[in-house]
Image (cartoon, rainbow, N blue to C red; front, side, top):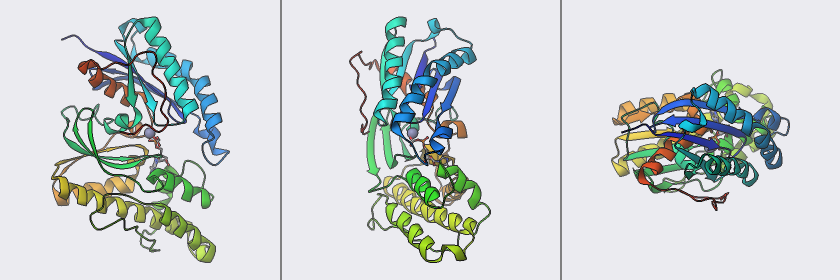
Length: 333
Ligand code: KG4
Ligand code: ZN
C-alpha cells in the first residue's frame, strides 16, 4: 500500500503547530511557534493576543514544516486540523489555513478534536501501541481519564469538576509570583524542595470517583501564603503543592486501572511533561503491573504532529469534513 502523508494543523491556544506525519506514525516535521513569551507579560493567555499571534505565525510555521520534511505540497494526501476545543479566534486561524490548503491542493479536509490529538500523541514513539487503552489526558484545559476502546470510540471515566490540572499549576505559579506558564517553572523549582514540608489538602470527590478537583487546593495555597507563607522556603511550598496534585492523580489512576483491568496507561497533554509525575507513575506501573506510555517532551504540549496522527485514522476510515466545517470552542470527546 502506498504511503499516506497528512499535514496536521494545531492552533487551539497560544501554540502554532504544523506537523507532517507519514502513515500515522512517522513524524517528518513538527514545527511549533509559541506566543507564550508574549503572554508572560500578562500573566496568562489573552485570547485576542493569542489569535493575532496565530495569524502572524501560521504561514512561516507552515513554510518551515514543509522545508524540514523535505517534501513538497504535492506529496500531502490530506489536511487535518483541530477545530475545537480551544480559543475561538486562535482556532479560526488554523481552520482557515486548512480550508485554503484543502481547496488549493484539492486534498481532503479532516476536522480533528484537539483532545484526540493529545490521546494519540505517543503513537509516533510506540509503533505497536493500539487501542484499547486507558488514557490520562492532563493539560492546561483538561484533566480526564478516558477509556479508548477504539479509534474514535471513547468512554470518559473521569473529568475535572472545576480547574484543570495545568490551570492549577498556572494559577498557583501566578499567585506565588513565579511567572507563566506555571507548570515547567514549578516542576523545576520543586526539585529543590521537600514535597512533605506542608500537607496541602487532597480533594475527595467520592470513594469510587474518577473525577478530579483542584480549586480547593489552589485556595488552600492562597490562604497558606496569606497566613504563614513567609515562614517557609518557596521551593518547599511548590514541591508540597505539586505533591498534592500528583497524589490526587495517582489515586485515580490506581482506581481506574483496578476498575477497567486495562493493561496500558497512555499519557497525553502538557502536564504529562512533569518530571515528578513521570517518576511516580513509573513506580505505580511497576507496582500494579501495567505498561506505561509517555509522550516525548515535544509531543506533550500542543503540536501539529499529534493532529496529523489522528488525521491518518480518519483518512483510513474515509471520514472527511467539508468546507463548511466551523470551530467549536467547547467541543467534547
Ligand atoms: O497541552 P497544553 O500545551 O495545552 C492545552 O491544551 O491546555 O498544556 C499546557 C499546560 C500548561 O498549563 C502548563 O503549565 C502545563 O501544561 N505544563 C506542565 C509542565 N509543562 C507544561 N505542568 C506541569 N509540569 C510540567 N513540566
Ligand atoms: Zn492541548
